[in-house]
Image 1 (cartoon, rainbow, N blue to C red):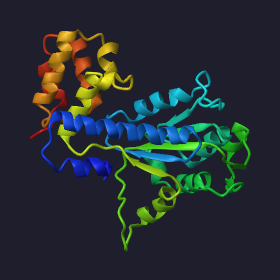
Image 2 (cartoon, rainbow, N blue to C red; image 1 turned 180 degrees about the horizontal axis):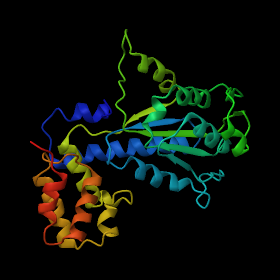
Image 3 (cartoon, rainbow, N blue to C red; image 1 turned 180 degrees about the vertical axis):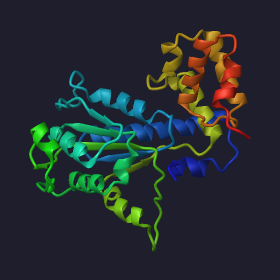
Length: 283
């Protein structure tokens, strides 16, 4: 499961809204700490969780602290590179070589294939290896390498963050599947963050935290309301609609709120009816 173990244990009790939000706040502190660990050149990281819950935006926000104009502890941190969409082994080889130096961060996002493809997994193993000067090599002939004017081998000193929605079985197993055997060497070379929330009650409370700017923290903000220029009254109506129907949506996430903002701007007098048509699951 991609659900935070501490939240999963915590969710088994009878909880108030305030108790859930307090625990979620600690959960987001954990996420921030682990992303900071990558930026401070301590380790690599896999962030795993359900879609639409802000993994990418949260990562971008935290890494902004380490942008060139905001140096952390006087260390020169280069702007992170985001690699998204369908990624082949050769494409990753080229992009990682271009960001191979210490202080450079590559975020592989929305590309679950990299944790399934043999070439991508072998490449990740090489880049994540903790042995000092071990070279990462591409042994097969490739026109792409020639066209990109990169070398056929390099030493990777940068840091990696892999963001994925993939369901990863992360339990001890005496008879692991073939895919698990391929993935385990990568998992053992980096920190693994299960960013998922245990149920819809926790997801609603998380969305409310961002809506209400919990503890006046800058990281808690529902930007879709501001970007969509949604009136305050309608923002409240959308939040009430979301909470009332939380168990009816196909997907309950920050992306769901953004979709309702789009529907409001399209048809202000019918957004709620259209939301039921478009966003609800079939019961």
